[in-house]
Image (cartoon, rainbow, N blue to C red):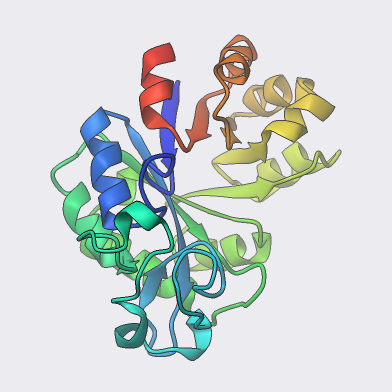
Amino acid sequence: MRGFAHRGDSVDYPENTMLAFKKALETGIKGIELDVHLSKDNELVVIHDENTERTYTEKFEIKDTQYHIIDNLTPRRELFKKTNDCNICVLEDVLDILETYSDVVLNIELKTDVHPYEGIEKRVIDLVHRYEMEDRIIISSFNHDSLLRCQSIDKNLLYSPLYYKYEEDMVQKAVDNKFYALHVSLMVLMQNRDVVAQAQENGLKVNVYTVNDPKHMRMLQQANVDGIFTDDPKLFLEIF
């Protein structure tokens, strides 16, 4: 089973920052997950929300702001207000450090479910090609049309639709669209544990988010899922 550090080692460090990613990689975890938005000047900004307010002390809407305006904000987490590597980074920064971790898979979530960010799909795929990381990138999104746009650009990369709630046709849709995996919340399995076997019988992987309880991790191991997203990579490695 592969563990993915969800927004890096986000239990101990500010999420989606270079510090969180570096600390996650130091644990030996074999997967990293991050979120990508598009700034006003078309930079691939690594942040979860559509604006900076929750994680930084000032509020800027990513889509309306040039990257240089938000690249040196102060994080809200008190211990890290003056810490290096806690600034908002761009996707290229993360790919730079992953070049030396050739066995680590990166999951890039396209945050196109609120704003479509026209052109974000091609920008992400072009960057993946530039770094020659096609064999260890998964692109996911709650906006499944965004994944179809990705496929029209490069059908050979790995794409995974995200689901928060169980949907009866989720496996069939993924098969029909030639997706790689289902990325589902723990709640999906609580609603229907059979989805794991159904997906795997149809050639799909099943990766589950976001799991920080050892009991739930062990339950998912028994359910034979392929991967777990966790805020606590050290905990995952202690169990597995």
